[in-house]
Length: 446
Image 1 (tube, helix red, strand yellow):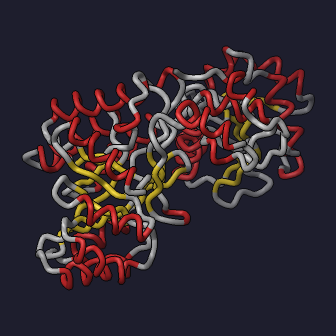
Image 2 (image 1 turned 180 degrees about the vertical axis):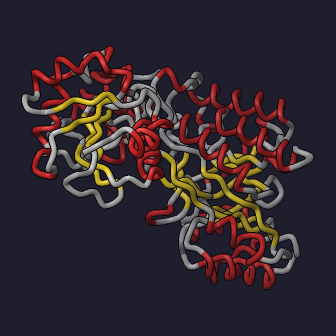
């Protein structure tokens, strides 16, 4: 039975030492109750309390880390079935499968080099899954070494042969790869390797009862960081099974299946487009690691964008820092435009201004991440806010003129702004960002 935050608090030392990363023991207890923290973070909890809290405080889906440093991928530790209930925390890692018989430079090089910027964030592939298709430990290790020479991103080492995995680990570089996969036939040898190396281990079984039995055996053998492969590849089957696994972990608190899931959408799809459709389903429902068999920028970009959209807090819009930004190399006669700090608004406006070729100053007001019309309707982007932002970032000191261009959608603020900013001329710009180049080239005059 799950304990409340107050019930958990009673079992904690109540020292408020902050060593767990939270300001008070009560705050830590509340996070434990919400399955967003682990009891091991408290250095002073008693053995009696550990025993009482072990089952109640453990996250329903274990957090598993693959890779190290800036490229590490953390999956699991989700607390809700649906994003709108709260939020999703750990985006699924997206990997490209490479067979050790493939041309590494031709297959992995372009995929690892691919990146694109969206709303100020860099979207790219998380790593490579190297498969021992040759059956040779030496060929497998040579392929892993070549991939590692291209990138320090996380690897998934795919082989049922423990000897091949050991040979590959000797040249992998010690960057915490995922071992794939333990099965009912080889789990003892795989468990020994995972325990010895301290690496996460994937387990594969097409039967959920068998999968649960395997996790219990591996836990008893001392392997805690596990990733599940339920062995389903069909679009409908994976939807059913992954949803069932999530419900068992969150609703039933069924510990043997409370681990992140790895999927292979290319194995159930006939062509790259079908694979991306399956992968999109897995991003939403509920993969932790997704291994693709094909790479194409035109197909990967929508998948990365979908992941970004789903794994942002629905109660907190993506936003940029308020301030005065330079677009190009503006001077004292360059235009000054103002807009909100909603990321999509900022990058859309900045992109159009940059594309116009007219160096400009872009003033960003703190609208709590709302778009222009939404912020205006909520009273977060009004004349007082805009005037305060102009003064706060001392925009006047950068200009020989006193002209401010406001978005066309808030043209009604013109009169109020003239009152708030005496001596300034308030100009109404276009409603849509796409019309900014024409405005800056043909309408704006210093």
